[in-house]
Amino acid sequence: MYQNYTIGQTEFVLNYNYDLPRNHVARLISDFVDSIPQDVLLEDSGAATGRPSSHPAIMLKILLFAYSRQTYSGRKIEMMLDENLPMRWLAHDYTYSYHTINNFRRSQHASKLIKHAFVYFTMALKDHGLIQNDAVFIDGTKVEADANKYSFTWRRTVEKYHAKLREKTSKLYEELVEKQVVQEMAPELVTSAEGMEVMEQELAEKITKLDEEIKQEPKIIKGGSVRKRRRRFLKKLRHQLSNDLIPRAKKYERAEDIFQGRNSYSKTDHDATFMCMKEDPMMNRELKPGYNLQIATHKQFVLDYGLFSNPTDTRTLVPFLTQFHALDFFKHIVADAGYGSEYNYTMILDQFEKQPVIPYTTYQKEQKHKFKNDPTKSQNWQYNAEDDYYIDHLGVRFSFYRYSRRTDKYSFERDFKLYRADKHQLSEQLDELAKTPSGRQRYMQVNLTWNYYKAKVKATLSSDEGKAIYRRRKFDVEPVFGHMKRDFGIRRTHLRGQRAVENDIGLALMALNLTKFGQSISRLATNFINNLKSGLRF
Image 1 (cartoon, helix red, strand yellow):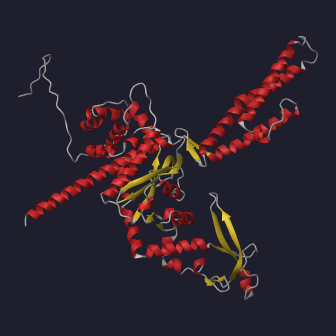
Image 2 (cartoon, rainbow, N blue to C red; image 1 turned 30 degrees about the horizontal axis):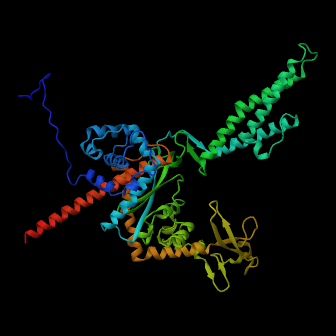
Image 3 (tube, rainbow, N blue to C red; image 1 turned 90 degrees about the vertical axis):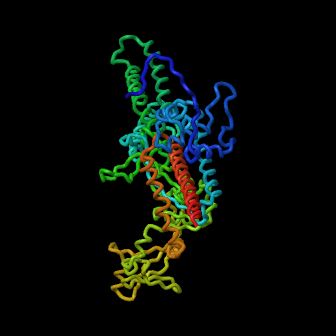
């Protein structure tokens, strides 16, 4: 027996309303977005005429639900609006083209809205008692950009060839000035594309003037026309400027503007920087275009995030903490050894007034007996605080020499005390040991501020409270990256450009938060029901 199948007959169609289960994630997404105030959801200024714009609340709902279902393509999200019942329920049966969806998630308003969403989500966690005031956990990972991995531009290469171009242009300018073709210009203007265009314009005027003078000459001139020879020479130089020097100068200047302090960028995504990725199947540390994603978590909920172009985590901590909206909720800032530096410790203690639970790079190494018993390490040398001198493992005495201050490329100042080996030791043998192989006196330096921070970090990590807090880092912040890359499949961005990628990552992290929050609520409800049932037995 088969189902009834007839063609060409009138069918009676019933329309009915559909609803979702109370514990469905779409309901949680809808309630969360509706909890955001309207003045935050809506743009400050909108068009008064024309077709009404898509409501940001609906756009945010459908994007969060699509991301929670691991759907990131604009065309597939458009298809979900037709085929997926929870999506239709969220969109109130409205349909949007993939152009509208993609334009919204790239917009500046979406960027502002996503950032505010993390603020309200953090407040919701605090209202539900899911945030303790003890510690926030920070970590970073590299996310590959949606760009061609072979479309790289290196700053050293650009600087090298730009310097050669400037040298070539300077020689050409000197030749033109010597032959009274162009007027003198400022030295910094000569080697720029703007200055080259001025030279080209003056050459064109000279050539036009020569054309008029040549028309007045007789057809035959004994020995040839001097003006024609000069015109050929000027045309050659003008062709060199217009077809070679000026385009190259504009190309190099545009590249230098894109770098913005970075060492590289991708031609298909100018905001992406080439970095070493953790996923390295060829085991050759191949550089790929990507972004450095930083997140702050508590109980595996992402409270805030930031996207940076520099590959090292050391220089991202302070900018990230500066924009972190919930920093006042916590007493301790926890991160791995990649964030341990004098600058970070100084800013956390002095500016943010928090307690860092961040080991420095050599912390684990210094805890070993081999390091503590190594006489060649300056930390293990004998120190006389009264007379301020050190004695190394060979018996050479180092007396205080002078103070020194150094400024790194990030304008951070470090103060050192320099100690120099005494010229006159207790014996001639020690006099020789006090010198380097080249015959100079040996030096050593001590950074008292850095030593103070190291001792403070050691004390924190050695305490019971510090050990317990730092132990939580392994199962608080690190699993979030595992869920993001394995469960949500985000190993590569889906959009291009800093703002678009930041919105893309923000939507994914918020979808991850809401999914986990919904599971936590369901688990609590189930436990509550089970407790009630178990209580009825008695």
